[in-house]
Image 1 (spheres, rainbow, N blue to C red):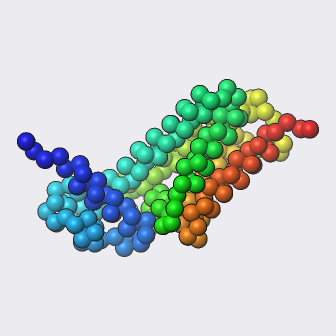
Image 2: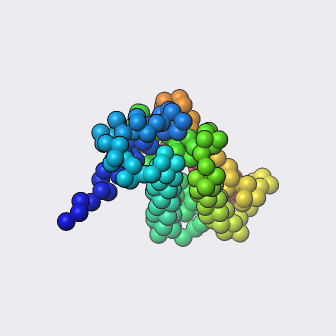
Image 3: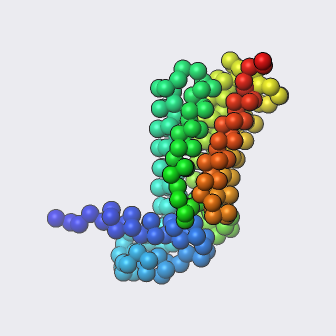
Length: 205
């Protein structure tokens, strides 16, 4: 009976992902990944033909987990509230709860790590990053469009502008926490993001 190589593949990817987050893709060599994962070169190249294939697999897995969190938290938020604004506030609250559990060393964001070294990454791989940015933008924009049908914002904004602001805050919060080495900064910024939405769409007193 053939052995299942999933555990070994995941171990290689886990080691490689942490290296990319720590030193970037250009600083992550195949040899370093092999040493860190404790595997042979033959084993590495059995799972990944090139470093490019490894980079592509990493972002594909990262995006899959990211999409899962988005869908899971939005579904839960929609189950807990009928009002679209409350749904979005709960959605952000669930991410706040998740980020509050993060500890040093802060994992960082693989999307950001790839963008910072986009010149060393193929267009196909960068396109995957772009697809996830558009996924977040489109999903948030749809929710905000429904919100603006029921709530008038205190200042003139479009739902697409607010969606981009939320996406920027989410991504920026992870970058800030990584650079400053303060894990709690991520949840604190998401709290400010939630506060902004409450102030923007709260009824005039």
